[in-house]
Length: 120
Length: 120
DNA sequence: CGGTATCCGGTCCGATACTG
DNA sequence: CAGTATCGGACCGGATACCG
Image (cartoon, rainbow over all chains, first blue to last red):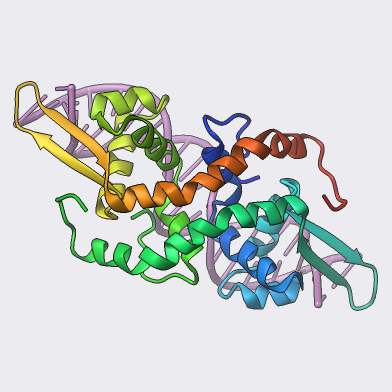
């Protein structure tokens, strides 16, 4: 639930709150690519994330109804994460933004190196 | 430039970094709606923002080539902000996400009130 | 394997006061 | 009008150690 606001000025604000945070885009991406992943697999997919942050972000996404968490009571324990229908619709809505990032990421990084003042 | 990362795992990550933060979605939305806004106008548009945060976020967006800042050396001083071409393309890419937020914001908020464990 | 608990530093962000 | 400077609290996020 991220900052857990109770109201939003616009839908975009709400969406960024849901998908914001350092790791959530990567988690969503990984689940979108893989369909279903175990905790340990996600930990490897999202390289650099700590256990604490991964579980925290997953719990927030779960609370928001974006991911589904399925627990298998076995030994060794197994937990599988997947996108809910809402999560999949979010991912679809996210596609153009991801595309935009892919297209202009290099330009953004260049802008940061050579600050400009003129119009684009 | 937000956290000012130097590399990204995927475009979505980059895009969220650019548009993340507490106020940027609202600023982009306001500029998108209005076309061109003065500092004081933006301050009113984005209700609740402090001068410090507004100027800080605007500077980051400017550094990323998302907004254009035009200074008119008059008395009293006048500064106008507008979206660059890159900023407009970002806004376009953001539209589906904003739509998603509008559509599901109420559901998200409900999810947060009544935590569920089943699939959506 | 899949978590939880705790500590702790950095950053975000708001409030306030001041300047050209 | 359009900023800048400084302070301080809250929160984000990493490291480590421990539990079922």
